[in-house]
Image 1 (cartoon, rainbow, N blue to C red):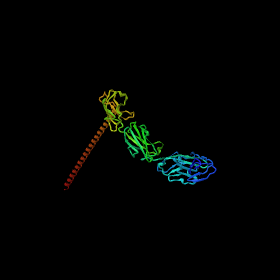
Image 2: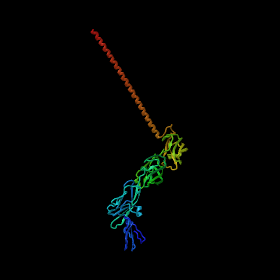
Image 3: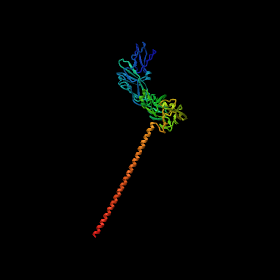
Image 4: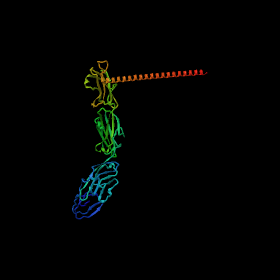
Length: 459
């Protein structure tokens, strides 16, 4: 409204929730370009708000609604017995602009009931026909009611979900692999990323096996996020890891974390395979018959420069009875790791010791009780015997070998006896056949003589 004799101006659009009351005596009213002009006003107009817009208590609206991109979606927001519902963007509402769609129950489904992009359900909820990134915004739904009930509004937030490409986190260097196997050291750095995702998400790296928790230590060190021209985000994280148990491998997962994670359920699994989990003692089995003085050689490749190899006596009671004199050699690899070789001479000073267990272990920065170890048990001869060993293990092995040898000899003797019996049986059968042949031949000669005598008598 424009008052030429006053200094105020009020503009209204057809969907305004404000009622104005004016007190005047003589008015000449004309319509010019959509404005109402008072040519004469005797009493100063007083603008009174007869209906206030308040936050809806009788409305049932979701505060946050998650929408899948390129899909038809619903923003639930409904109320009973309303006269009109008008939907705005938050920006347009704050700027006192018209709604982009409205529905008035008294107008029998007005033209605002449906547009090319939106529809309104009979309960007041908004339908987005094709969700795009522009749908990611705060909306305002304003309900008006008959009979003087105050108008109310609700401001639901639409969050558009755009899955990344590919649809899961990627371990850098292993594109398009949701299950990754990597040959790595027992400590190092992992990188994980998502590209083309919306909204901006938080990634995390966690241990996968809940039944073996604590086998690996993970520490997030960096997270970056950048927005692309199309409104999506590229997200990446960096984490350091360290294996704290002497296992051959660990499995970690890279995934979205937080409340929104249910809309990004895909998880990328990373199996970390550790090379040569323990040092190697050259040329020695787990059990070894040895002299009380001798040589031991241990090595470990591709370890951190601050680490070292040392010998440790497993049986603490024998620690001060065995001495080591060691020489360590190191060589540096291109990746900054080192190869360590430990050559040592040992001396067992107590003649009563018949066995001892020694271990080659990694020491230095970051070492703990879970470090992998190479172990060998040295079995020493009994000084009061002729070279026999007192070890129960050795006696058991010798007893088993004796039983096997005796059993083998018995089998051989049995086979020889069987062969001898078979040969004697064959010889007896051949003799019987020969005797039977001679007997038949004698009978034939006797029969021939009898026939000759009978011929002579007949003549």
